[in-house]
Amino acid sequence: MFGNFWPKFVKRYAKFAEIAEAGDSRYAQEVRERRFPTAEHLFGDAPRAVIGG
Image 1 (cartoon, rainbow, N blue to C red):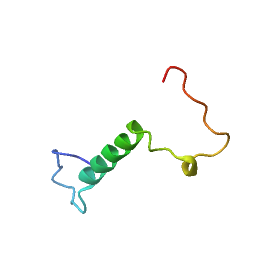
Image 2: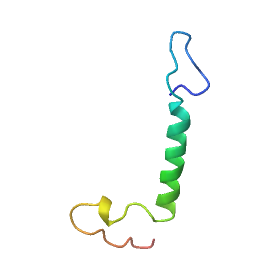
Image 3: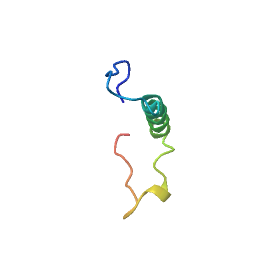
Image 4: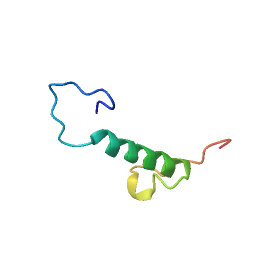
């Protein structure tokens, strides 16, 4: 979670920053490509079309 800064008193158990960055990039790409969210990820009424979008 610290990126390049790593306090001396912290023991590194996993490279969480790298995992989080990869997940963030994948999420952003799917949203831009309109592949997420899909019907399985929604609840309630179906979303309405975006005006001007």
